Length: 139
Image: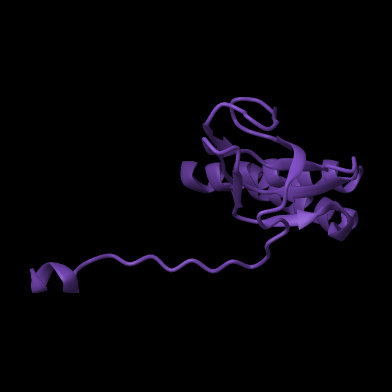
């Protein structure tokens, strides 16, 4: 047993920013690989993989908050709580459209000059994320 404990894998998670914490909201709209969808109270429990795009939170007073996410997961629990765990998340007002455009150009260049399938796949992901940042920054 002691040997197993020494070899046990441990995970360390660092949260960079929390935008909503146990706050009641009217609706959350998320982009997922199975399609964008809205989450309302009493939504069926769900687990989905986020695709690059904008998460929109509609607060009870009607105010909307838009946050760009690069990837991650969204979980809707039995109690109507929702967890959005994103690799990267930034409010739209913090996005720099010109920097996003530069990142897109660089990613497209890397995609076009990729030497192997792995490099091409990594560059394709970078292109997709950069395209979505440019779209989000234009909102």
